[in-house]
Image (cartoon, rainbow, N blue to C red; front, side, top):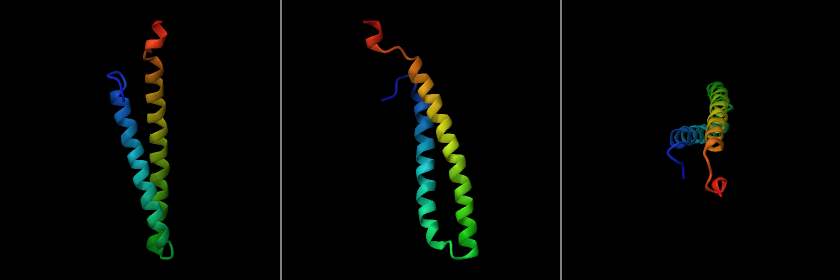
Length: 78
């Protein structure tokens, strides 16, 4: 569960993950249509979208991780 400090970054990470998952599903479906010119073009477009979505996911992961590492943990005060 995100903390108040990490909630915004967690929401961004969740959104990026959902986008990446959706594009992955679309890519899997597009495999079936690669035999046509339009199908191949759509597949290549989805590949480019997936790469951009993956980069966005990596950035969101790094941002969330950095915030979480800055949050003091209860065990740190003992």
